[in-house]
Amino acid sequence: MTNQTIFFISSNHERSLIAEGWASRLNTQNVTYRSAGWFSAKTSPFSIEAMKEICIDLTAIKPYHLKKEELDQADIIVLIQDFEKDEKISLSPLAAKKILTWNILNPDKHSADPNEKWVLFQEICDDIALRIKDLGKTLSSTV
Image (tube, rainbow, N blue to C red; front, side):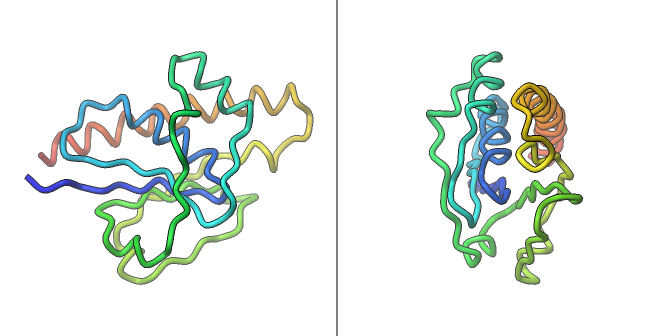
């Protein structure tokens, strides 16, 4: 069986890192998960702490600076965007056929208050966990 590549992409890597962290827990063979983005990689202490609560170490995952042409070789592209706050990301027509789009809040753009931001990071960690679980079911059923 050939190896599949799944990119999780978001503007600043934080949500894509969380997705890769959760995906690393899936029991899927021959699948490579990559957290990626176009902008400078940024990891919030909130995302690191929220994932640490469930024993996933985001500091062990190195965000990948993506070149758009690489997406043409991906099998699945999970585009993580906050439809209300993030800039729209446009992709090539070939890459666009492989996209799953997840509307997930960008905590940095919703609150400056540290307590509110902490709660938002915990919520998006839970949201992404459920979506990864569904993705894992889909991948298992196509094997």
